[in-house]
Image (cartoon, one colour):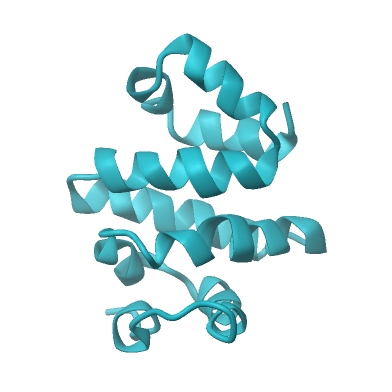
Length: 123
């Protein structure tokens, strides 16, 4: 299991409630991009039901966006943000930091999303 997936599981222990043990094992063995694009983003869309949860998601994405490793930042941009903007989780936009929003600007060339929602200023 990669460091990024391990950090995600530590940050979101609810993943173990959301997915069966077998499905979570499959998800974590599928690789970083599949895990975040398919499994984590689905979890965020279907499990998220309050601002505190979405705040945690925003903080997690920002931590990846500020990572000194370019591969981790790329994973945040492509594996997380590009898929997340196409799901019904607009509240996450309120909690994205400036580094996450920079990654979104990069992604905007490849992904259509409502920039007024996702790139709004933090309150």
